[in-house]
Length: 334
Image (cartoon, rainbow, N blue to C red):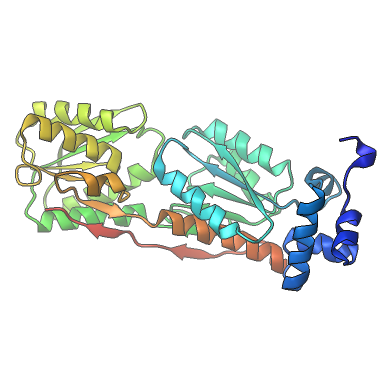
């Protein structure tokens, strides 16, 4: 469309029979516009094809209606569900999420945060509490609300919505020991970058030590956590340590792979060896054997984080320290 023919905010206001200021506030999702006016403005914008110019708003020193979101992966269903929760938390606000993926790489995370801040977002949602110094400095100086998600074990910049991974690992160890398991193995992937998996392992080992127990065998791979990796690593672990009666995995993808190996090898689960993962994925319930897991409220975490920023934008609350901790539900399949 030629610039001189572009539909403007004034056109929307005229079509909806409201003032330009009312049209602007309705499109931004401001809370002081009546429901009827919001509906008229949104319908008018739709009818005449109004798009708006968020970049111009950013350049004029105003905050855009974008919320920057940085997650470590889109290949994992865990973060897809977090993003679904974020979208739900923004519904009806007129705000939009913009996603960046770090691949558990600190340099990529820094670039994603920096690029998002250049668009003057209304706020940022960032996964975890263990950013490196340069990224944390960006978050501290962002000038917009920051919500760190999925972790409570550390010091947040502003708000934090998540769970304690130390506690989650410890709770699983308590349950498995109580069920009579004594000789433990551990399988994980990407442990040099996945700080939350490391925290769960530390919490697990800490509880074992209080019981006079330890992890007897470990298999780690550098690549991503997949079902195939779990199957291959479980085969290797049990070949080297056939007397293990329990294997703790860094997540359910790996644990499901472990179950497939045991089924193929004729190893009874959980009678001969118990398997335990993390996240509470649907695949665990679909298996013909019972696997223990910690079910995490991923969608709820994303929704709560988004609602924090939407509320801050509407009320001009600015940055604030808020902590919202969830507790995973323990499901012991023994």
